Image (cartoon, rainbow, N blue to C red; front, side, top):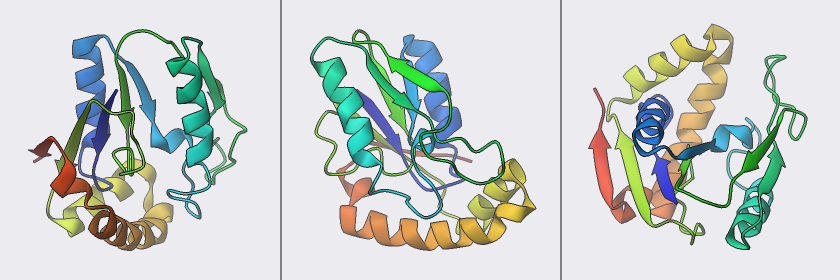
Length: 160
């Protein structure tokens, strides 16, 4: 498993998508789980349960968070199956957390300018999400400082 982590708007989803295509890997996003009110904690055991199934040689399954109404509905989206063979790329905020003991490689995608990252995220998801992203960025700063995600990464990629 390869974890591709980094702050919102840094370009990690694009990087991970390109890497998955190059490697023929399965791509899983933490956006399938996280919500504005639960960026990192309550959903993590659901992902671990699916990954445990894969580690046992069985397909892992979970339901995505449904964002189609403009707000998160955990466990109400499409079902996803993780195949128990090949490379898995886990992409998204907190994917390379210290508690993720399954990774073989961690990549931190960075774009140092927080204002630019905010504008990228708002452009992608809409002006109505701006205040959510401002709070999210505050949470990210604290998370990355405590988790030491960037310092522990095997590779740091700087996006433009």
